[in-house]
Image (cartoon, rainbow, N blue to C red):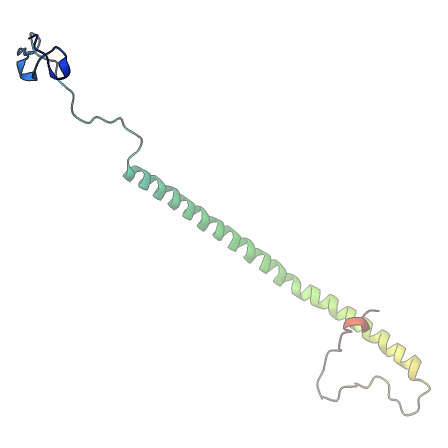
Length: 143
């Protein structure tokens, strides 16, 4: 095997000139290989997540319904309280209006007492029905 290969270097001419050496298994054989795919658990399954999300939403809907029911009851109670107070408030407004009307009539008597042919307390609106007095608006309003 001292033949020279190309370029004048010693060595084998071919790989085929190598002696054949074959490996064998160790006595008793090789240990078994684990080739199955065994992944660790990464958390709850999709069905579990879906069920938990559904339960949370159902609980939320129940709480929203209870809150709406409570708010509706409070609103009804407030409306009933205001409805009860309406006659009292209307009576106070009527007393205030009568006092205001009497003051205006008294002022009219003082101002117009020297005018001949002026009829006191005659309505200025000739509609044949009661008309509430106009309230002052804008810059003309006030006392």
